[in-house]
Length: 442
Image: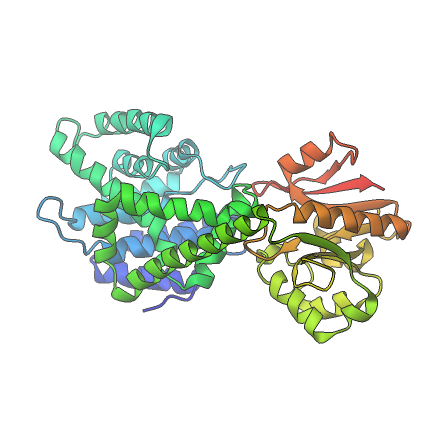
């Protein structure tokens, strides 16, 4: 069955499957609702644009239950294991005080140790917290270097504090394998539960949360899958063979799609190196902007942006045709060539929803131009198109006698621009996204 990606649907699917698999005590459904409420009250619900939101937490829990049908003569997953996997999956990424998207395992474990509500659930389910901690620590990624060494030290402490297994190396090894199982499920689940559109959105979320330049999305996604399939092939195959055929197909289709796009990206890069392609910055005339084909071309590129960066999604055509909107494009070869990216923005007063979020003191003064996030066709990032667009947009804003220009950018990028001739200044900072609102004086 294909899941609809919303909290209520995932919640119901998990609860129904858990009951069918014997996790039918009230504490398990209460634990599930407790988790959802925690994420949503901390601003990490389905609307939070980071990879580690409630949707991810529930998807991992669902696939954990589905794949727990895995059978192995050496390491069977029994009923006792199931309740530990279920609980660890539910809480594996909960970091309520996160300053960045990627959870800190230390913060997760601190929360688990201090939550009185969770302690009650664990008592009702007859679960040892030390084993939950060990399983979560084993999901540390990447599992190598200092991260692995530190996690192994903490896992050893968990085992020593657990009366059930502290003197049982065989049991300890079994839980380490269950942790490995959960770690692989953690990285497969989202890509197994949807088509490539969902996979691409997940990759964009991850890139946005980790402050990657868009030019790195395909490269690092391919490296991610290759590491999973090659370096963790044993557990990866065991998880994949334990989920329904359509989910395996989804996952492999996502892998192949990223590989294909990475190959196309390399070809585009080669064409720039061989000077078969060149970028031409272009100021678009008002008559061009009223043409339907022009608007459709821009919209197609615009839709590739992460959804939270689409500031004018609902009135895009109107904003393109508005004479007060500044638009500059980058085309290939010459000013009549195909459009591969654009910059768009207008008077700050046109962005009421933005004002509600950042409370810019210049709102209403009619002296500020807002530059929306740049939109460049996937595969063409990394060839200086972004800097060309920003430069051209700023020139146009200056010619229209605006005093200030504002926009959003990653915190590190703004910090660097603060030290250049732009002298960028932070206006509002957002955590954990670290995607901040800044101002430059024109």
